[in-house]
Image 1: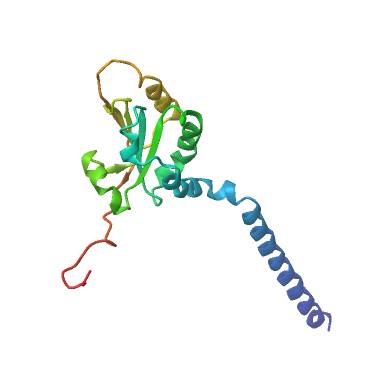
Image 2: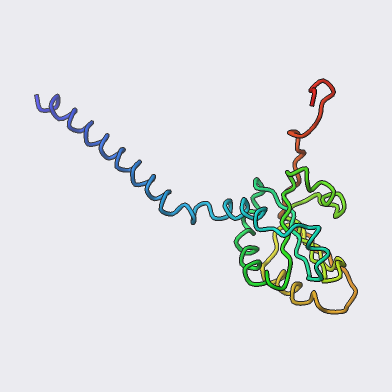
Length: 181
């Protein structure tokens, strides 16, 4: 007799525990969403925080140009570092962030031969390309090259790391002859 009466009580306890766990997980995600999704949020905000490239190359300030994509895991990893650099140097340097999935930036993607992301290009105040970084970089390395942007040495440095994302072909904007687009 007790086993029949005990089973519904056990099922109610298990159901209560499951509901409690779901509530705790949901509240944790809401409270700590910035911690869990900070990189994704930062990448989405980069486009809004960006200086227009046309302005950046004409205002006599050095320019930090990054090509990224919201789906790029390496870009997500580097986003907090780049955000910190932007906060620190934005008064002295133009920060331009171009999403490779946006057809609007196709001219720049071709001009700077972007085929792996993230790609960071550093320009002096005259608009001369000084450094190109492809792939995951240490913040200290980028800081070192930013500090040397004012130097008169006329050399160009390219640093390619093995951790980068290959740009995906954007099929959303392709026009197929019968698509009426």
